[in-house]
Image (tube, rainbow, N blue to C red; front, side):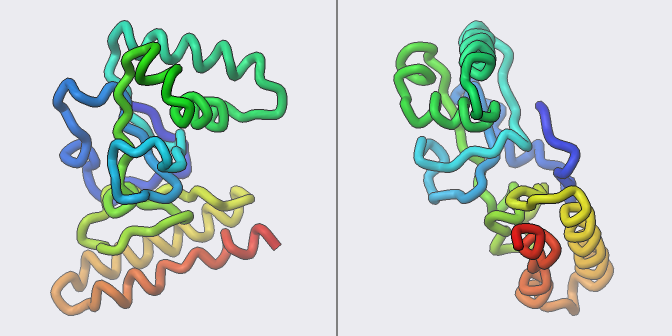
Length: 172
């Protein structure tokens, strides 16, 4: 498993990750389209778990080779193109990718609809580190409030307050 430093764990994410042999790569998304196998999900390499096998070793070799030869593209952009193309991931390498639902693996691009379900929060779709830290602090404060008053706090009110103001303003 790998994650960016701007991913906050609210709960243990492992129960939400598949331990069967089916997916080789389980990766977070900026926006989840409702289908965990759909290649149209926009990936985010800020949080992913990969099963070590010959297929994924080939994937990483291909990915990093393409990344090193792709001017102007970040590693995430290169992997997204490989996944969307399909031939290079599924057909050629045999790698099965599972896209993680933002209900559980939330982010600033698309938040969870249920605070009782969130495992991780990623400060994605945010331009500056200062804004990420500010909004992650807000999330921690709201999380603490929710946890201390879990029976009396309106879940929808907590989610409504999770507006990522500093991140939104970082793009202006």
